[in-house]
Image (cartoon, rainbow, N blue to C red; front, side, top):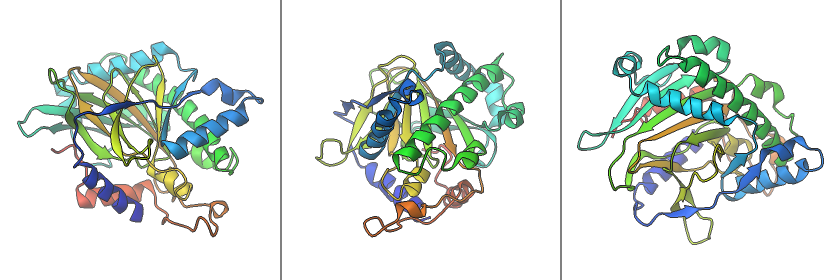
Length: 323
């Protein structure tokens, strides 16, 4: 729980940062196809490791997910948020529910964010609980879930390889691991790009892969060495995937790769985003391997599982989409 408490302290501290004059950040763009070529893979793995260590995030192109699958998933997500009766039937603040809808509001009671969270792996088990409407929702979101999981597993192989652990280090455990899909709808405020729609936080898995239909993601970064500040992540490359590091990868790497503190802001556009978080199974403890512990890097973290994390946030009421 030490990491969780530290992260919450970071989140509270970052709430003091102003939202004005947020500059854009150039995020490394990595060609996924290089991982499938024996001659280019070593350099691609080095690039991924460098991005994880320096920035905690990167973008991926040439990943093999058809643009039509990405656009259909975003379309399905947007369609769901237009169905009041369906949303009401899935509303819950129980963070353990496999399908859960919730909303967050601003102080003037205007809605700022709506969330639908879905368990997605194994898909054959969980898809039966997903919404039936809008039409073809399960098909469109299911196609994307399968494709993005394929990419996530290959990226995790490369990340483990970059740590010197070998790409097959956690093969079976990753194959049996969890996948959460979170679809988000952010309201628009005319002429604004300075209202927080989702407070600063980190994700608890190994990696999260994000797609968005317009800008709104911001990350806390010290890329220029002048202290941490918020930076905009611009969605410039069509159909690119944004990848960022989660808490459990920080634990696994013994702090070599830090989980990314990020937030979402409300702007003048209605924004839809879909995040896919990947990790080990709910009860599987993540610990630092002995290969990454030495005099220079003593063990820094206690082991924990997704269940531990859910128990903690439920007890502390640190989630739920409340203002």
